[in-house]
Amino acid sequence: MQKLIDKFTAFFHTSPAVAAMAPGRLEVLGNHTDYNEGFVLSCAVEQTTGFVLAPVSGTKCTVKDFRDGSEMHFDLSALDSKPPRNGSKYIIGMLNELRKRGFKPFAFNAALESHVPLSAGMSSSAALEVACGMAFCHFAGFDISKADMARAGQGVENNFLGLKTGLLDQFSSLFGKKDSIIMSDFRTVEVIGTHALPAGYCFAVINSMKKHTLVDSDYNVRREDCESAAKKLAAIYDGAKTLRDITPEQLLAAKDQLGEREFRRASHVVQECFRVKKAAELLAQNDVKSFGQLLFDSHDSSINNFENSTGELDILVDIARQDEACLGARLSGGGFGGITIHLVKQTDAPEYAQRVKAEYFKRTGIEAEVFICSLGDGARVIE
Ligand code: GLA
Image 1 (tube, helix red, strand yellow):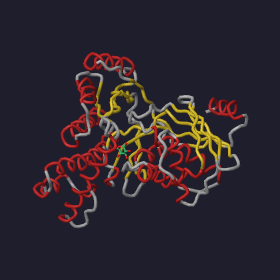
Image 2: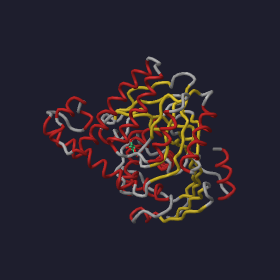
Image 3: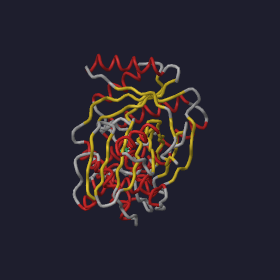
Image 4: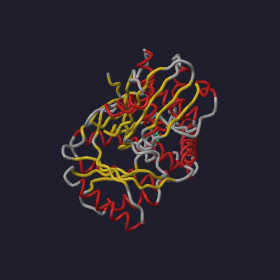
């Protein structure tokens, strides 16, 4: 962070008034369950996005993006226009969402940098939303709960950018805890448990480097499928509101009343909620082997039920299955490309990651990016 502060000072010839940082996240288990008010195991990673700012008079804002050296300029009136094409859309979107909650936008010079890989499925956009949101609110003395800050970030995606995502990304970036996997309930919007990763284990993150071009619309269509299945099930089962309320047995019993695709989408979500609860028990018992198997099961369900995997993600998970060092692997995040997570012993991780990288290159001709991830703390303002 000190580096970013120094770069800001050199660039704008003044020191920043506030600095905030927010991490990326890994979805450990509980795929597409958040907007179904279900359960998720996730963690923040040590890769963060930093955002520093100093207020200026007038209405013109400048953001120096030290990720690529670019400069973004916008006027506060941009809050009422369509989102721009560059990364300032997340910042403008956040000002917009915070304004809806009573915050008064002001003009500023800002700088950002990030170690969260872009568009890989580690929530680089949520990290930027949360980092700038924390900086704005802290500087203005605007009181907002962490859950509402997460909702504001989700609002940027839902209302400004048209992506109907759930709360997972921003929530994990805010509530992450060092060395811990958090278990969250997205009905009550709270962390309901924290689990240490079994001693000596870590996640190797391997980026497939490929993403579908229609990720946003694919995501929204999956959400619609879940919602239409939930509506039909709610008409059958009293008190059921979302897929979170349905047990695997109830779903099976209602199979004939759902479309074939709807049934598979719902199966994924219902079973993922079930797997999350099971995984929390296994982590408490330190049963790392069975926990890992649930990651593989989740990926199978992504292939067969939710159809949000890709050939490249499947190759990565297939390589993992054939390597004894890996206890479990799956796609992580929305899917349709991006990253896979691989549960391995810390001591095996560097060599394992290189083996997977080499085999992936052999099978696809693609150079994968690998990270050995440590689980980090949630977003914070640096005093
Ligand atoms: C993306 C979304 C999240 C969540 C995951 C899938 O990361 O932003 O809200 O739905 O996909 O679990």
